Image (cartoon, rainbow, N blue to C red; front, side, top):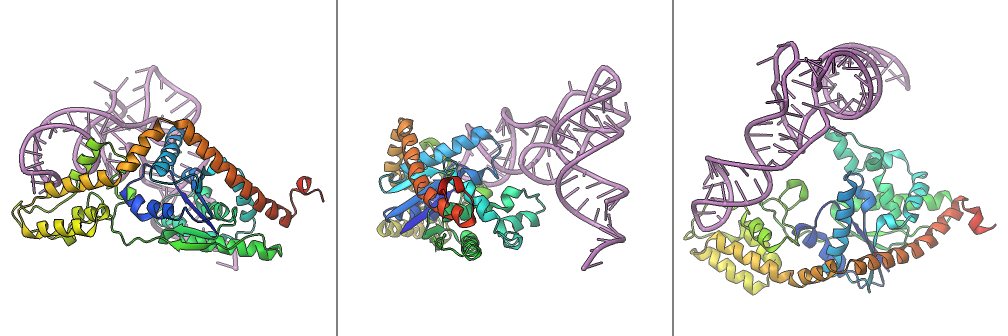
Amino acid sequence: MRVLSGIQPTGRFHWGNYFGAIQQYIALQNNDQAFYFIADLHALTTIRDPEVLKQFTWEAAVDLLALGLDPKQAALFVQSDVPEIPELTWLLMTVTQMHLLEKCHAYKDKKAKGISADAGLFTYPVLMAADILLYDSDLVPVGTDQVQHIEVTRDLAQRFNHLYKTEVFVFPKPRVLDDSAKVPGTDGEKMSKSYNNTIDIFLPEKKLKKKINSIKTDSKSVEDSKDPETCPVFALYRLFTNEDQQKELAEKYRAGGMGYGDAKKQVFEAAMEYFSEARQRRVQLEADPDYVRDVLKQGALAAREKGKEVLDRARSACGIGHLKSGS
RNA sequence: ACGGGCGUAGCUCAAUUGGCAGAGCACCGGAUUCCAAAUCCGGCGGUUGGGGGUUCAAGUCCCUCCGCCCGUGCCA
């Protein structure tokens, strides 16, 4: 069973990314064949600064390894290191009907906001389909907003198979990620880069403390009894602690006598504890870029090996690549 | 397709007859606060949509291209 998932390097990863996605991807890595990639070709539709993109791509690799992605179990690679992807994208593009893309929400949303869309954004579901189909992926863990794109992928796979009367492509199934863990941002809304309310995972201690302190609270005094259920600080505390710890803090909230400053300090300590291993690993990885490069290289090799196999099937199905097939 | 309006900091917008590109919000730092918020002080932030031209000097005038909005038409 092949598990495949990609993540865009559009910034540093934050708590919302981790609890909403990364943690769950990593939990699936012990499947027979897990492929994880950093989607720099997708990020190209947003980031126009080459240095920034390079930096984010690198940081994403280091972060994922630090957070527990194990290259012995899963291949980690950068999307643009696999040239078979854009080639397959073109093959799929030729069987993609316009209406299929016109109804995709990423494009529709932008259009609705009056922002001009480029062909990259419009055709991005096809690139995503290539990402998935290239390795005979069975299972694709995604957020609910990406389910539509998996459906497009299945449509394209089916249409290609049908048009060329073959069984080239395997139909992938989405695995909808659990988004029940509520991760509020510093303003109390859902943590998201577009709300500018994120808390990055690997923030230096001092900055992290400051960020946590900046979480919006009501203006109850220390003595007042507070409601843990409606407090974003408490919601974050939940992510890092066990039930006993949560009960204890909840009681303190209700009893009064404890201020938000205190609660925030506890969140800080719990988060530092929770990510302490990852932080240590990250320091080691930063000191050894050759290792990271090697992981990405090996990952790309593994991805290409499988990718070539599928691409060859696709090429011969549609009648190109006669030099290779020799027939 | 034609006519009109518009394009300036991440966002909303200023900039007199062509004369040093500015403010508010946001962001970062500090004071204050149990922590925030509010308030006060400080800081970062710009190829003025792209290209060309006129001029000592262009955000401003001219040409051209791109994009967005409004109106009208054309095409079913």
